[in-house]
Length: 322
Image (tube, rainbow, N blue to C red; front, side, top):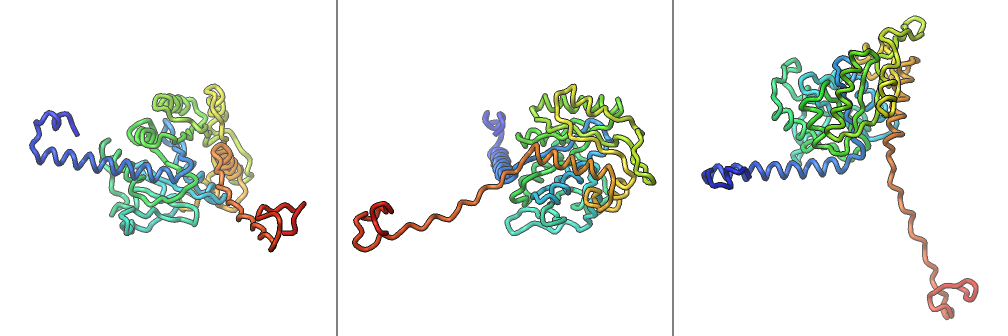
């Protein structure tokens, strides 16, 4: 309750409203803790620079982990520019709440669940004109009110920069790990350094760096040329003492796949970009392993003492005939 209520400046109705809000917030915090307790690893895909292919990395990471047999959730918190649904060709509108009041995420396969604001809009082209508090509450509800269930990984696609959305995730999900995406150019690297400093300030562990658009794959000969330079992200990871999760070259088919709603990592084509994406998925799964709970073996059947045996129920094969 606020200080004004405690000082008795509010009337009874106002005090009741404050108490109701406090109870609602406490209940939501409990729902968030319960939901996060069922998710082993949380990965925030972020970057200080826009246009580096962050959503492409997030979608292909989630799909790659799901294809590897893991239970994966993909949460789009880029509220002003959500693209995840389009990149997965999800066109079904929001189906309403379940019997327990939870919102069902979209299921793209047996192993991949998706939640995005875009498919909850009547018109997907409507802008989201929200300030910080509304964005904060929307992201909290994406955890508290969505039926995620048991997950091995939750991949969170954040907008560029270090504003409300990544701040809310960092404060709400204390054990989240940041996967930072950059391109090789110095301008992009300068902004990504701000992201790394943001992670330090909010105590968000960095899983590693990915250098996207690192070279260009010719669609005719499949050779790679340095269109935007290469190596800038790897050098930044080395100088920052962070893991480097790989270089992903620019392949025109990656963009086409995103427009068509077919993640490139799931396509049966040969490309250095697919190899790099698969290696990134493997590196993430290795850095954040999922240890399956061992199934206890059935109890051994105890021998029944033979009638008249002298062991009296404590079977010793050296001196009895049980």
